[in-house]
Image (cartoon, rainbow, N blue to C red; front, side):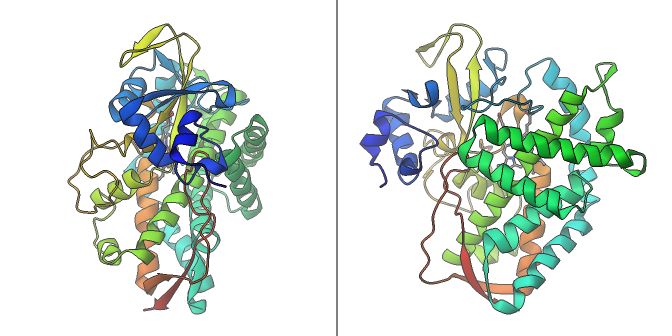
Amino acid sequence: MSRSVPEILENIDLYADDQVDHLLDALAVARTECPIRHTTADGGYYVITRYEDVRTVCENPELFSSAQPALRGVPVRIIPVDSDPPEHRHFRAFLNHYFSRTFLLRHEEQMRKIARTAIAAFLDRGELDVVRDYAIPFSAGSLARVVFATDNQDLVQRGVAAVNRVAVESTPETFQRVAELAMEAMAEVENAAQEREDVLAALTTAEFDGRPLTVEERLGIVTALLLGGLDTTRGMIVHIAHHLATRPGVERVLRTPDWWRNPLDEFLRYQTTVSFMARVVTKDTELSGVPLRKGDRLAVHFYSANRDPNRFDHPDELDLTRPSKPNAAFGMGIHRCLGQHFARIQLATAFEELLTRTTNFRLKEGQEIRRMAGVPLGTPQQLWLTFDKR
Ligand code: HEM
């Protein structure tokens, strides 16, 4: 049974299935009444709900460390997500090159092929489950080919399953499973590193502050790429497809060549797929007048920040004509998403290929859309749509 707003506010639990339906409403009340809200869930943490406070935390990594970036603990390294300055700078300096728009556009044709193959499998049916038939094969396929340079579908499928579990459960065991898959991916690279020109191959020769990366660091980076790159883009494909099927005018917007700039920012603001991340306070301080002690844990709630009326007019409306204004969907400060250009290219490609062959999407009747708790707050677990062929 789903909890009411007053019940949720008594003790917010960001992983509770019974809080998903009204969590955003509860966070809206929290923003006005008690914007830095304590909960006893998962050992206790503060939920940071306002845009400006989320920004302050993210822009002060010395005071608010990323050493434990998930509330339920991370037993393995996930680099650079869990790194603080100065270490973080070295990792980003190495990784940024492989995630620049120019570098990634080299792989655009491969991404198109992945999309076309997925579309061909459902095109004649006139209906699809967006999650299984399109979002997963496309986002996992793109990550596998572009970042992992592998065609090993079995490894990728297991990666998808493992990352899914982290997203909704986020327990040490689920992280451990992803790290094991990272180890498998890294072993594949080491056998063929000479012939490759991708980020994983580069990890085997990269220098960090004048020395090679340790095995733990390499695995930490691979684990972070698996975690960061799978359910995020997948979630956005599903959300955008839902709008496509339920709101007049969205198909027209998605057919404009530049929709992946401002309109995509608005989709991301409205449905912030990485809804929160964690930080730890490194010394006694205060945030907007609330005293915080060394060791206190914070959930920086990007989704809530993106619905803050002090930052965005009519924040609970999806307004695809909204003037450009930075939002928190890709994070803020030094940890701002490494994969943001990759996500934009994937999303642009996914919908361009889809709408070249299809039109007139509708929700299939009679389905109940179940939405996820946890970090990918509210992402449908299944989404059946019907369409016409073009
Ligand atoms: C729509 C898609 C995506 C969204 C909404 C998203 C969101 C985010 C957010 C909010 C952060 C900040 C985390 C923090 O402050 O602790 C982040 C960081 C990160 N993301 Fe993404 N992400 C997306 C796609 C991707 C993709 C496709 C990849 C990689 C293949 C990726 C890799 C990463 C990595 C490695 C970090 C850590 C960066 C750092 O700590 O310096 N993300 N992402």
